[in-house]
Length: 305
Image (cartoon, rainbow, N blue to C red):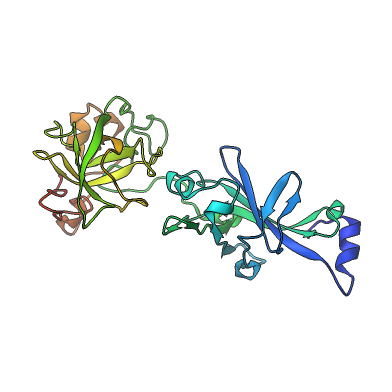
């Protein structure tokens, strides 16, 4: 049963009501922002809910069982209390929570009724201007796999502490090498670029990771390297960036782990290998990294053991 103050319950029983919905997002870094179905901005409990980016509450589906409630809330980033597309790209919205309130906008002293709440799921950007959070109920947490699974390749997150199911134990903090973009492929400004300071790296950063330290893509997020040209210092990213790469942008690059036992031995970390490499498989496809394509002459990933 949803709780509400006697005054709000009495108002809801009237033939004509003046209610609206408030959707509040609470980020893990302490920031909060909100949007409302009302046609004007509304300040409630110290937070301003923006009307210009109103949402359709009918897209939020609820269920009486344990199935996952879900919905979408579309909002122009530029007008929502300083939340930007960069925040969405950098992961600032990861693990954030949302709460949907019902209030009487004519008399906010009546308090609120909580209609639903949950976690933010997928976050996307459209033309660098719009984010679309996927709203999931807390029931989604009950669907998470708990326990070990098996795989030939290592399941550890490279560079993470050794504890836990995905712990690695290798200290990757000192492996980052700085670089500055000197050229961008005009046909693929979101993925393919060349830079100074990274030609002839040994070991090659492939598989590898890139994180941007300047420009609109700057964040703590790490992007997977799809291909690397050691002679020219050219890098091809596996996933397109949200904003085009430009000359002068700065980044850091390092080698990643290809999840094979031989790579783990090279790092002196075989005791922390989180895989079962001797389980037989039907073919060799499962022993390949995500791609072996070529991007503008840049060599892609190769078969691993």
